[in-house]
Image (tube, rainbow, N blue to C red; front, side, top):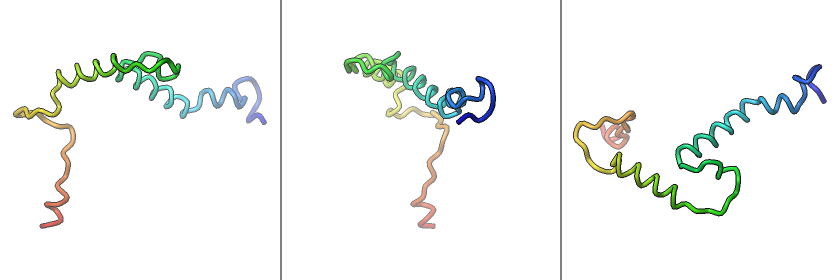
Amino acid sequence: RDSGEGSNYTKERILLESVLVLIYRNCHANMERNFALPGLSTRHAKKDMRKTFHEILKHMEERGPNEYRARRKSKYIIPDAVGKGAA
């Protein structure tokens, strides 16, 4: 039942401090920050995505990810698999 002695060794304590729990909490926090949804990802409130879509639209308009811009750099270069296969 218990993995050791004392209150720090109970199953509840171990699960509470589990790495997976921390990852889960961080994922929720990232989603809330990135999609402007403070508290709505865990509390199931009435769905109203207008603010979220507005924030995403504003971000897209500022960054223009689908527009060509000379000398813009990418962090990742997609390898040309077709070109490699033809060579």
